[in-house]
Image (cartoon, rainbow, N blue to C red; front, top):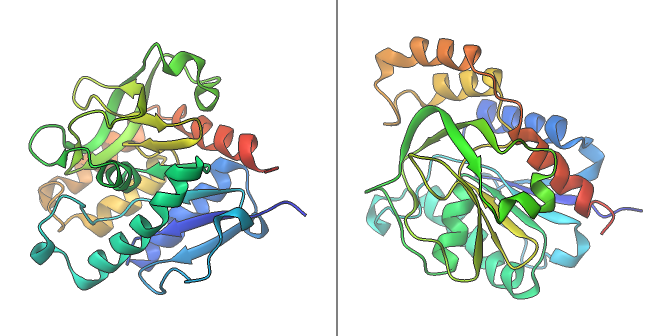
Length: 247
């Protein structure tokens, strides 16, 4: 029997978490029986969790920022961050299949002791003009992805330098490190590979008072997302699943 993918979710809002989970399944070509879902806002990471019991790890997005000062993190945000970080030594040490989406690139950067911050490369809610780098052209997760594509973004913090041991796969003018790979099998994206316009509309409504954008601009952002042509990023999620689902 194939091993399940471990899907770790960080969003404390049930509507946002459920919508993200459904998108990961849909865009990844997965059924609910193909995954083990853990909402880290509701339960701790099991102490006896074995990565080798899974085909790979997918980490979703969330409102937390790893670059926030400890005193500025809520108890839930601090606990979630600690739980995900606790997996990273084995993930990178064994080169275990991993795909971190948005928050996940901050986790990977923090684990690798690279600079993650809010000072330079945050992007407002909307689309980012992404370009595949020379290294990215030969990466299997970018197979079938055009060299230039639009992706949904919305983040306060970002990698400010390329972490040691990482390949730079996708860039954009506003945020240079849109996708990286550590080793051969550990990936992270700043954009959301699972997101479509309907999903981002849900998030805009939920997070409009969380400092990502002026709340009064929410309707304009929703219209912008509806008009955007964002389809290429989901291929990355599907390629990840296809590459690792058989272990």
